[in-house]
Length: 366
Ligand SMILES: [Mn+2]
Image 1 (cartoon, rainbow, N blue to C red):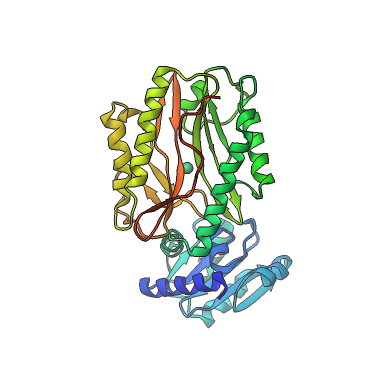
Image 2 (cartoon, rainbow, N blue to C red):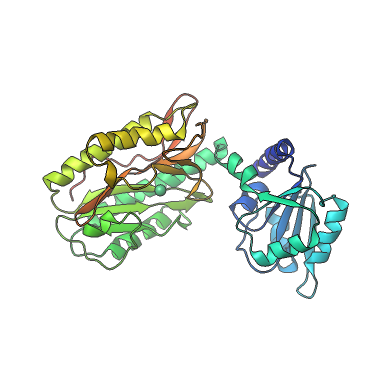
């Protein structure tokens, strides 16, 4: 069976269980996930309405009709021209499928110009977030998706290996980013999954530093946080390397962080709560005196988007289930000195964990 049809059926089941009459998606990862079609969101109304009876209906501008027909799985399609009002189509659909006085899930990233039309047409509707359906489904990957996650991670690992020896004093952070992103494309990626972070020296202590023109100097620690999109799925990994020789202090902190990251990985198995994974890393870092310098959550889910459910935070009650994919990325940031982050994507297996990244975590001094 087509993967999107299989997923659509699971979504309908969940909608029924939650008393959601219909889910309305605009172009987004959710639309791709449920229908197999996606494009850039815009002001023209392009939506998919999935009803709790399993009917998948597209309303699309005429200029998208053939692409939707080619890529999407659906039951009905209504197209409209720029001189027509798509509100009339929504109105007719609402009558046909009884979309008044019910609960409807809405894509969170829908443009207000589009939502406004829906809101104007449907009466006495309670709106909820589409992620109540899609978020819950997307966090556990199908085996088809799991393979794509493995491949995206492998491309990122290989790309860093291939450019590693070109990272040296004298080149800029931006040059490292450009080499890495180009290499990922050469290896089959569609592009980076987010703007690559290259934080060298003092910049490494800023977790989401904007890569810029700073020139790498002998002895710099360089935080490289990057990932790619391959076959629509996102990878995300971080390594911190040293150009030249690492200081004694850096070596000491690096070992603490490396062990903390490993302990968090080893804590992953079905049935464990996400907060316990966070705790495994946080406790070790805290016990070694650096707790106050670990200033963010331990990880986040990844899939069609680079940040999605589940989130691995200090208080998350989420219970880990097989085929959840998320990052484990503790960091220690010493302002005015250096920063270190080590990140892998991991997948929960039937009885433990599979690490999707294989790039070495031993301290690298180039
Ligand atoms: Mn990440």
